Amino acid sequence: MKVDWLIVGAGFTGSVLAERIASQLGQKVLLVDQRNHVGGNAYDYYDEQGVLVHQYGPHIFHANARYLWDYLAQFTQWRSYYHQVLGVVDGQQVPIPFNFNSLYALFPAHYAAKLEQQLLENYGFNLKVPILKLRESASGDLKFLADYIYEKVFLGYTLKQWELSPEDLGAAVTARVPIYLSRDNRYFQDTYQGLPLHGYTVLFQNMLKHPNIHILLNTRYQSIMQEVQYKRMLFTGPIDEFFEHMHGELPYRSLKFDLRYEEREQIQTVGTVNYPNEYNFTRITEFKHLTGQRHHGSTWVAEYPQAYVRGENDPYYPIPQEKYKALYKKYQQEAEKIQEKVLFAGRLGDYQYYNMDQTVARALAIFDKQVAV
Ligand code: FAD
Ligand code: UDP
Image (tube, rainbow, N blue to C red; front, side, top):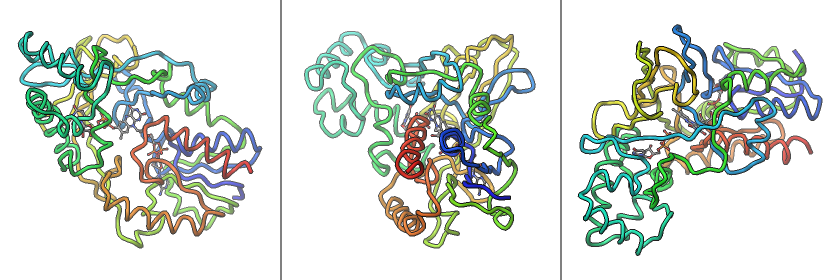
């Protein structure tokens, strides 16, 4: 087979670039994925009972940049959705990110009011303060509060998710869920938030409809290299795998997803409930909240963090630690040597803790700067 581009991975990164190259440049693309579906980790499907579920954990699209929302709107209508998360703290379910509503739910009113006042004086209304920063800068009552939130919300969850404490990870990890000095119970504050009205998989199918795109599933790219002639390649799998781990393996975190259907209309009051301190899983998500589907039953998923073992499970999260950044840099240098022929991108190709909007932004930027030139 002869193509202009061989693209490895049919997730957001690979699919956006396939779509751009096919529709804007009129070039032929072979899009290969080892899984039996397109969509990468955003893949969704109807389970046996007819509930729309996300195979690889809950996916909510959120972005501040309008061009990303509009670009994807060519392939889907959007369902507006604001994700809400409750965390179980001292036997109560309180809003996460921790905010003034969480404060008043957990503390006697007069003490909550005092803490609220001090937070407002020291930081300001509507500000987001990462937990590590709050712990560092607070004194007196606020130091007590910072330690309380750290222990009850962050420590147990982070140990489960990463087998590391918050200080041992890049500060950006826990800063994704900052203390929010407001009454806003939404998990994200981005301008654009939602899910594809008919699901992610339909979005991908629409995106990849172009006759210049040929899709090959259930295929590891290594197995077809003899049969394919291509001018350039985009690789969105693990960058260390591409280079056959010549500098050593990059580590990833994996997850086991336990999906259960119940003959109940609703399992929990919001999309996700986090369990920082109880159980071996981190959170439970009930899909119907996200998708808006009506059904007499409901399916939920519990996420059990695991170490990634090559060949046994999937690499879901790069591990944001300085020493691995340095190891990744060695692979990046290898990538630079062959950049005329092969580009790397995506959560695994760039070894970056990207959200979906960031992968789309990265793919569109690569198209403008390195492909359509
Ligand atoms: P992927 O989707 O991982 O696609 C890479 C593809 O490459 C895979 O399908 C893989 O099978 C294929 N591949 C790898 N190696 C090979 C090979 N050798 N041969 C052939 N194919 C190969 N982001 C959000 O914005 N909002 C959320 O709510 C959100 N929730 C998430 C929840 C979880 C549990 C996880 C793990 C991630 C979440 N994300 C979320 C992040 C989101 O999944 C990613 O940003 C996005 O899917 C990454 O897209 P990608 O194309 O870079 O990679
Ligand atoms: N986190 C936490 N407690 C929570 C929620 C998040 O400690 O209740 C920390 C934890 O380290 C987690 C990180 O914040 O890995 C980022 O959380 P997010 O929900 O963004 O993770 P993702 O959805 O990417 O798995």
